[in-house]
Image 1: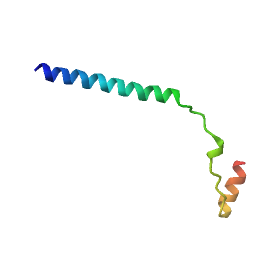
Image 2 (image 1 turned 90 degrees about the vertical axis):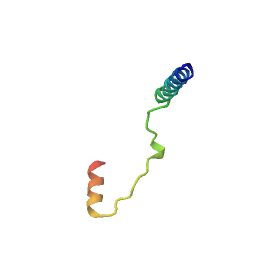
Image 3 (image 1 turned 180 degrees about the vertical axis):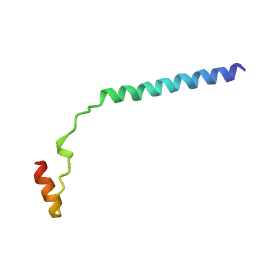
Image 4 (image 1 turned 90 degrees about the horizontal axis):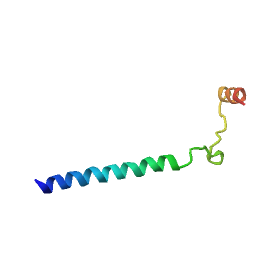
Length: 56
């Protein structure tokens, strides 16, 4: 019985620590969008050219 309770407590503590690490990573990593990775797609059809011209 004691062994089962110890395993349960250790499992809960390790899962809390594991989740806490990922929560910290979510707040530490930058959220800003980097413009250099944005792929610019060339319009192919007439409707895409008109839509692209209207957006810009």
